[in-house]
View (cartoon, rainbow, N blue to C red):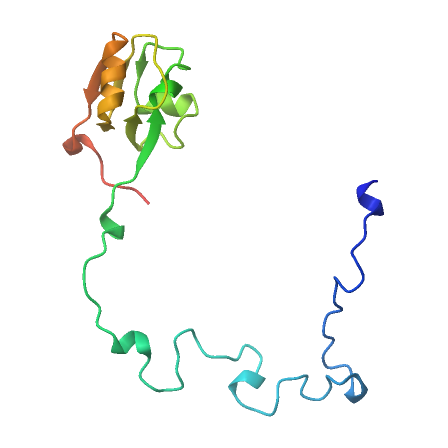
Length: 156
């Protein structure tokens, strides 16, 4: 069996509705859009949440609370096991970026404790999990926490 020999079961594919092809087609004249009105027009239709001029539900309900979405700090996470792959004896955001472990060089980095570390590394990051700290120090390495004051404003 080859890909070019495969075909759908009968009835699996429907012919598209061909509108505006004369009265005999069943979809002529107004092309299934009825008579006049907003929905009959090209590009017509109401925006999401519009209720025909009635006060929309989303405006009737109270809006309470605080959303942290705009102010959150996103961390790129790197596991201790991934640090084993690094060639050099120190790890910071630039070396992690060069090795492909994080996407951008200026990202905030958090080191997590998944995996094992056998070589001594000096790791600079913004956050560490407790297990990551223990594993790095147990392997003879050093943990350097970059303080939040040194972190630049988040760039979008």
